[in-house]
Length: 403
Image (cartoon, helix red, strand yellow):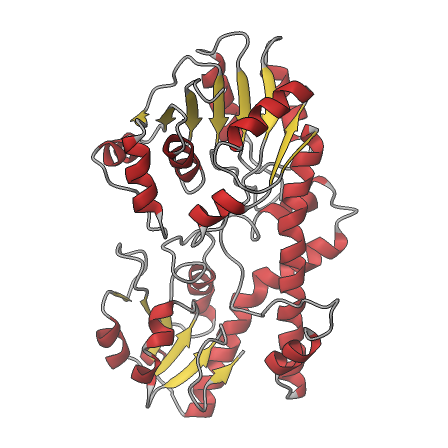
């Protein structure tokens, strides 16, 4: 299979690194995306988002012969990595992008092709939405990604993988393909198990984060230090509480658990409540901003600044960002647009967005650290004289307010 050309469909945060990793390890790859501007950028030798090690991987893949196009090609193996959003009312997965990609593949592929779906889907999605489309002779495989922005290249190389397939031989064949670069263990199972394990992994983390967020509210109410409590509790060998924060973003932990709530509304009660807790955290931060303003004697909301727009530190990914969620809810709390700065976000995404840290700091009295970028940790001396609400617990300055 290593000599067969692989057509990777979808060149976003997951598809592009996967395509580059395969190509840099000697696998012939054609990357396909319907976004002509994105394809043009890649053809010009430029990546489309910032990620540690991605530029070097891109160069190695180009040397390995990777090409980019808006067209689907005729080959024997396809990897589909397109978005799978969820309906915010029904909480069910929206498989339309995957379904369309499969339809497009079926219009060109031979009758013995293998279609690998990397996109995260709810358990049973392949059976309900994909299998009825596929003609006899074509193998279906589900190999959900397991990487995180900020450390994608390393995790692609080292994380364990799950490959779900109807046919064991097809699963083993795709496992060998991933083994061309993956140094972790690759488990071959059935498709429904592969679907479920990916969603459960992210749901476990979401519930753990919700517990930490709820614990932070309890400790705030009771006048206790939640971070000290978590630190001591985590010294127990069977306890691993994650850290509270201003909310949950990205396209995994903030989305995937809703698939289970949407599909099993009468059963996923703990998951449902956990997700509601996480989704309400930006509003809790707004309350803390208001309290901090009162404590510091700051009366002008226009002197409040949010540091960080991305959903996590040291990446440029703003999907489901807690800061964006907070800004959507802020009017009923503070009434005026807050100032915002993020060193990783070059485009103007929101009003009052700054592109220089010093200019941002000069125009605010209260700095709310929404994202723990390395920049603010290393330059925290610039916050001297400011009132600071550290929602990520990353600063060591005296007198910093916490969640």
